[in-house]
Every structure is written in C-alpha cells, then in structure tokens.
Length: 227
Image (cartoon, rainbow, N blue to C red; front, side, top):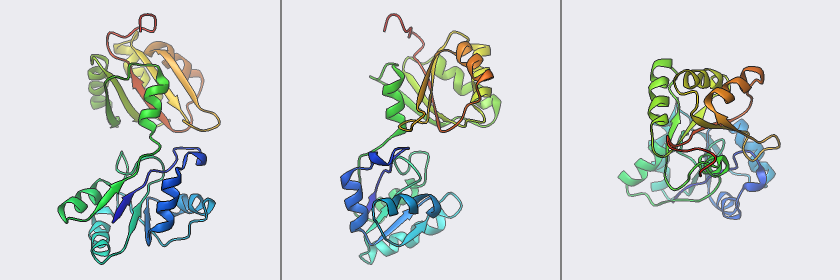
C-alpha cells in the first residue's frame, strides 16, 4: 500500500490523527526535503527511513518505490506542505500505482487552495485552480486576463518575489477587478488582503510581500456589495 498523506500548510496542530497513525504504521516515508520533514516527524515522534523525492529525481525514484511496494513494503508520501501532487511531487507516483495495480489511498487534510478559497470571501460554488502563474510576463498576462473574464473564482499560487509584478499587470488591464492575496495561511501572521487590483497593487508597492501566497481573482460579475 502507498499512502498519500497531507501535512500542515503552516500550523503543526493541523496534522490529523489519521495522518500521524499512518506515518507511524508504514515502513518507509518519502518526502520533498528531509531537512524540512524530519523536524515535523520528530515532533510527532515518528522515526522511519526517509527518501527524498523532488522534481530532479522523481522520474528515477518512482520505479524504485513501485518495486518496493510490489515487494510488500508500505510507503507513505508527504511533501513540504499540504496535499501531495498538488503543485508538488506525487502525481507520477500515483499514476504509477494505477498503471502497476498497486493499492493506494489518499488521506484528506490541509489544503492551501480550499483554505484560501473559503477565507477570501469570494464565491465558492465553482472555482478553478491554475497552480503557479507562468514566469514569463506575456503568458502570465494571458492567464490573468482569462481569470478576470471568468464566471468563477480563480486560484493561483504565486511567489512573494513576483506578486507585485503580477498585481501590476492586472492593475494595468483590469484595475477594478476584485482580488485577494492570502498570505501565511494557518500561521501566526496570516492575512487576507482584499480589494481591487489597483488597491492591492498600491498596498504591496509600499508593503513588501512575505511568506507563502495564494492569489485569488473573483468572478467577473462579483462585487463585494451584492454577493
């Protein structure tokens, strides 16, 4: 069995009892970065062999893990934060489980996407998640324009080093578009900055963005007064 186990996005107390029990049960744990995951595991008194899986070695490691699972070894996969495979390693391993008839299960747990969606105050009945916005400004501009014209809430991950540039692009083309910058979710300095693209751009022009960021764009017909 291979278990895909979500870990807290910031607050260790969000670790579920089932996640802790599963990690104590398995024979082997894979993680993105052993330096990041080991303190979390030690906090919950979990002492298991660790194997790092990241974008540079995932293709090589997946067949090895499938072979171990075939040999009867129980494996858990965690990433640095949140649900494995969502903008993190894990998708290739899950696909390999399906293709090789390896039993697997996905545990529910912390998710920055859903946390930000609910906390934004934007419509939640339908939404899209676009992962990380493109690095190149031209492609980023197209993605932002499409989101601004969408009838559902759009959610993206964004770097704190690039959020000002992203806001500048959107403020130039859709200055009245309602947006939300959700920062440091579940952590001590959690904040939700809501307003028009122009207002939020002006805010971060004088307040440097720090920490993990989820960027949300409201539906095209949304106004904070009639929703």
